[in-house]
Image: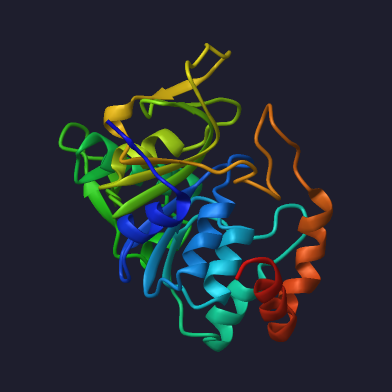
Length: 266
C-alpha cells in the first residue's frame, strides 16, 4: 500500500543525487511543487525526463539540478523559449546539459515499453527527422514478418516518477481526470513513484473519464494543495497565464532568475 508522506520526506527518501526522475503532467497536473522541493533539497546530477519540458524544467536546469534532459519539445507554452534551458545548452550555465531529444510519439512509446516490462517499443516514426542520428536510444530494426525497416526506441524506467493528481484516498489509491497525458505510464514505468495530490479524501467517487492508480502501484502519496500552480488542476483552479508570460522576462537574465528563485522557492 502507498505510504502517505510529506512532500519533503517523499523527495528526501525517494530521490538521490544521480537518479533519473520523470516529472510528468500534460498541460495541467504538472508537479510544480515537487520540482520546487527538488530545488530546495539541492539534488544534483539528475537525469530529468519530461514529455514537454516547460517552466519547472527551466527552473530545475537553471538551479543546477539537472545534468541530462530526456524530452520531446521544450518551451514556454504560448510564449516562447525556455531561457535557462537555452543558456545551459548554449553556454553551459550553470553547468553543461546533455540532451536526448525525441518526438512526442517516440518518448511516449519509451514510457509504454517501460510500463510494459519490455526492452523497447517499435514504431514507424523518426525516419527523415534526423533525431535518430543523435540518440543512442533509437535504432533501426527490420520487421521479421514484412522486411520493413522500422525504428526501435529503448524503454525508459525512471528511478522515480513524480506526477500530480486531484485526489487520493487514505489507503493511497490515486484518482486523476481531465487531460491525463502519460502520467499513468510514467508511474507504471518508474522503479518508484511519488504522487502529489490536491486533497486526501475518505472515498473516491467516480468522475467522467477518470484514471485510478491503485495503492499497490504507488510508492508514496503527498497532499500538496495547489501543487500544480501556476499550471492548473481540472476541477480545482485555472492556469495562471499571466505568470507564464512574466516568466519570459524573469528567466531571461541569470541574476533576475536567481533572485526570483531565492524569493519564491528557497
